Amino acid sequence: MKTVRVEASRSYDVIIENGGINSCGDYIGGVFKGKRLMVVSDDIVFPIYGERVIKSLEASGFTVESFVIPNGEGSKSLSRYESLLDSMLMFRMTRSDGLVALGGGVVGDLTGFAAATYQRGIEFFQLPTTLLAMVDSSVGGKTAVNLTHGKNQVGAFWQPSCVVCDPSALDTLPQEQLLCGCAEVIKYAVLGDVRLFCLLEDCMRDSSLSKSLEDIITTCVNIKRDIVHRDEFDRGGRMVLNLGHTIGHAVEALSGFRQLHGQAVAIGLVMISRAAMKRGLLPESDFDRILGLVKGFGLPYSTEYSKEELFLASLSDKKAAGDSITVVVPVAIGRTRLLRLPCSELIDWIEP
Ligand code: NAD
Ligand code: GLY
Image: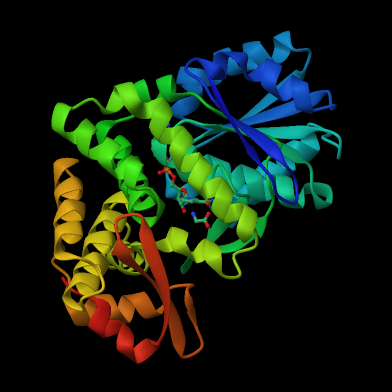
């Protein structure tokens, strides 16, 4: 078992433990003084893990209710958010009760936003069940729902009170979703950790990812912890987490969200790395290693969309502010630079 302490507006432990989900009642009971909890989950995850979570919470003395949403991005909506709040009210939840997010980033973002806003804010706990949620969305307190025409456009910074990552829960995750999480892990390695990059290369060579998952998740959570510590409210340094995302979001949007987020991030990472290499900012050998890792994990690295299509779609991204946009550029494996550019120059950084 590993524990990472996140120091933020609310400080909390991230516990990384095989089988940790079965002990979630102990971990939550150790930090939460309330008596009632509502488990929010989706219709794939709840049938697999719901019973053991509820059993563990009840064994720790909590009264537990549940709320199950359809799986998928469509549930990060204002209407689903409203029905969750209505259920909380029907359950007569008060400010001393809490929510438990059991699932991937969709469940975590929706539950976190409900916790941030119900009766002006109650505590919540994250039990992430995808690799992406373990290494990224469950830590750092970004919560949100989507509007019809914009992803994550309504949200709040609201930190959880405890996060329990159970790598063994990834055994049931479809391979395609696991690889999407790997794209975010590669992103962490490129932006801040050469050792992690080498570990991923080893895993790729001997197909030994599953043996190293606890180490990989802990390393990523440590990197995110440090970034959130420096810039909890995303005013500057936290932007490095968007490495590969400006072009990635464009690919996602152009595909009508049929291209999965992690796949789009992999494509975006390769494109921005290629642009950095062509400008002499990233050594060619580092670019070759990044491309090799993306390919080695079976992730996509190119797209059918043209430079112009990607450029126009990138401009509608949240990272564009007025006439300029901040791009995260890798300058070595383990190091990035933030570049603020006039929006019109972004097209020169798109290298399909
Ligand atoms: P997801 O929550 O949609 O989960 C992917 C699929 O896997 C779903 O169908 C789900 O039911 C299934 N699933 C989850 N865990 C499973 C398990 N253990 N076994 C079997 N099936 C399982 O997707 P995601 O990739 O986890 O999250 C994507 C969301 O996260 C997006 O909405 C994105 O905007 C958000 N996000 C948020 C942050 C943040 O900082 N808050 C960061 C990155 C991404
Ligand atoms: N996933 C981006 C962030 O947490 O800032």
